[in-house]
Image (cartoon, rainbow, N blue to C red):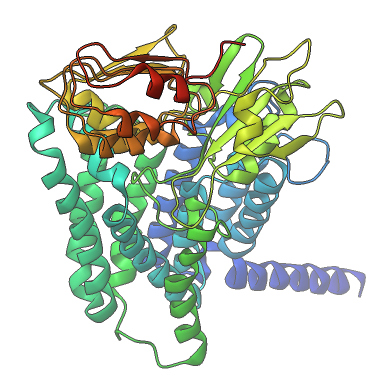
Length: 499
């Protein structure tokens, strides 16, 4: 009787294990779905491996916690969850999602789009309901990647040029604009096709992401290796998602809602509500960036290094980094290229809190302390430097890595339109225009240079009327005007006494 009960209990336990494996194990998926999932797991593991220092506890660069919470090393838990995902896809992937979200909350440096994008595509292999989520995710990524590039001045300038030039393309300057337009329209085109003819988009999906992998590979660009597995996942699993999408516009309310959300919520990026990493802002370079001014000088907030990922450039994360690393009296400038958002300026107070101040206070030295600098240093915009450099305009720095403080035009490279670029160089103190065809009206464009102390106008057609437009500049001390009709009376009305 006892033996029979033991056998019965063993059979019951075996039955429970069998039921568990059938419901939650790898056998619960079709063979094709499991192999796609396995590919996604491998790609996610490679991404984590490439960025390994990102997942542990760091001192430099510091973690960027959302809340004040002890840091936690996520390295082996994340790898472990991927192993569990292969054996038991549903609970394993659920655990992986929990760890990804927790890792991002405890360190916003980990809010890199590749980790979460791969997880979304893996989810489409495990849960049928996620197929629509993944479909609209990839459509949104393509559409907005193209749209962001089309409206980005940086993409048409230094960003596309840098990609071509570093890839070894000869005479990249003559081709980068055409390249920029072609890439943007290709991404936008694949996204549009994916909305109306999902299967057709499969071919564009595979070709585009394999092309990106080729361009970013060690053979070509040798840059941003952590996104290579992501692009591989987009090509294979993303292509599968599009190929298995039977209808262009879903019929159920849930699936339509998913589509609308994915297509609309990236608009929040333009007002700072949604992080750029989740809005398809890929290589367009329209991101907020920060520079910190200390006693030792100015330092850009960057990522990369051993982490192999860029700094998560958001207004929020830049400020958190500043508060964790700066000292009282240090300054932070957040340069934001978005049309609907202004730049931000901060000074670190004695309590270790970043206090927002005005641009005038930032540059004037109103918060100078015995241990800190007298004024903040603004971030030079690459969108301003690029056209000036391509035109051959001479730009001077006090030392490598420091901001540009002087710009010199010559008769051969002067173009009134280039004066518009100077507003992106907020630390300029000297402008040389001698011998150029600058006009009185052109000088109005220099009023944005709040730190301007000297200007060279020798041998130009500038008159007293033009010089008098410079009167609002508070620090202007020198106006070189030999060989012009400018009078000393006009100069005396605009120059300020040396403090």
